[in-house]
Length: 262
Image (cartoon, rainbow, N blue to C red; front, side):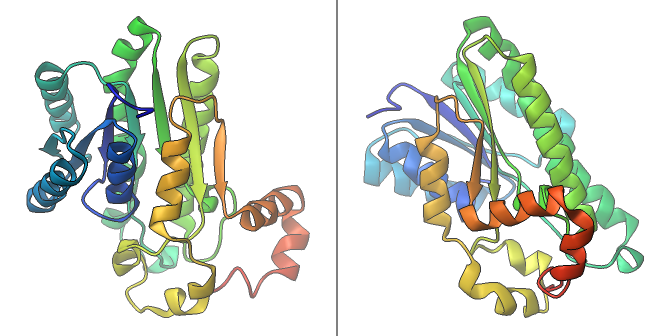
């Protein structure tokens, strides 16, 4: 019961790794607090967790694109459930397309959800965590934030921003007991690709390399309330992204076909 008494807010908790993280938090004795846009899914997951693990599982409908709604929901969470001990910023989406073909509305939406929504949720919990000198903020970024590829230019840009924000925030909180962790997974078998890859071609090309959501969720929850700087999954992909950052010109030439799977 490592997380007993800890309230962990999870955004994007209605499916994928957010849902799996909620199960892992409950297994560890914590109280998962679920946030997402689809209330029906949240209710179903909450009821399942309560029956299976005998822990409370509050949920709140939230669209992280709405900054006023974020303020209202987080105020309600604290008022109804008490201080928040952990925040896992998982809400996000991607659209894989060439810049020339992508609409400005889609570009704007990706930044509103993946970046500004994440920053706003973080802003909501920081004062109470800083005051109590206790807490953990985990931001789900991506290997795409380290290694850009064709047709993921805007998505990669949002994840670059998440990594920059996370790394700076960690340094701002150095010396405190408020921890900040970035999670950089490669492709995961979730419904993310129903929007990102409507043709299905990318998933077909990289299916054997995809991570299981349960595995990623386990790694995330195991890191809660530890001074883990980054989680990079899978390890070999992180090595590839490191080589790409060190030798970008050579990497683009030698790995051009591998980087163009979308």
